[in-house]
Amino acid sequence: MKTGVRASNTAEALIAEMTEVASKEGKRIGKCVSTGYGRLLVSSASDRITEISCHARGVFALFPEARGIIDIGGQDSKVIRLSPDGNVDDFAMNDKCAAGTGRFLEVTASALELEIDEMALMARKRNKDVSISSVCTVFAESEVVSLIGMGERIENISSGLFRAIAKRVGAMYSRLGSPVPLVFTGGVARNSGVVDALKELFGTEIIVPEAPEIVGAFGAALIARDSVVED
Image (cartoon, rainbow, N blue to C red; front, side, top):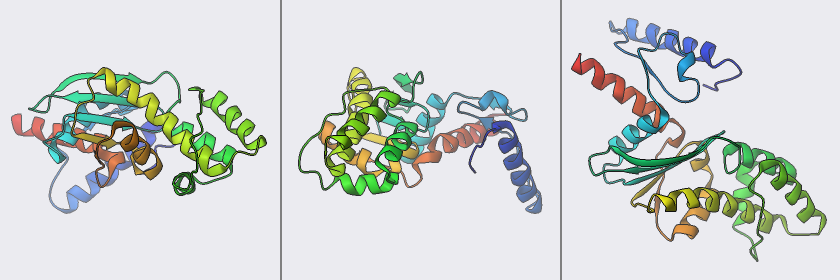
């Protein structure tokens, strides 16, 4: 469900729905864990766990061989290094601006008058590399408009934007030692243009889960289940 303006209302609606489904099966919700930016707003949550821990738990359950995670969501990006037993060894996070996030893609796609998925298709047709030098979403939008005005091909601009995102998150990832195998989570992982740019940058394969945008929520559910078993 889309979070919407009031995350707390959305969360409570989902909990009510889950409670109804569980009761029809003669079950109940044993524990609820909230995560993400709105985790403190979920009043009925039993525990509130950071997205770093939840992504680590979710990824390790799906891909126990994973040693690195890149997560790019709508408002932030983060990188995580996992130990062989799935614990968080180290992490880095950009939550101060929208650069290199889903919002960055939305704004620049609008400047190109394209859907984000269309950008990915266009980027594969580039005939030269165009550098997007600004890491600020607002300035990058202006840079895109200037490139269009100079007659630069949309295909080359699209590719440049994806590579700008890859370079920004790649810089954080390299500081953790660029661990592999690497798993890419978050809604932006559904964009093939960003996936291609990261593969090109790192020179390695990248694992993308079937539903990358809910891996953190999946991890939170596993933490809740484990907690109930322990209790």
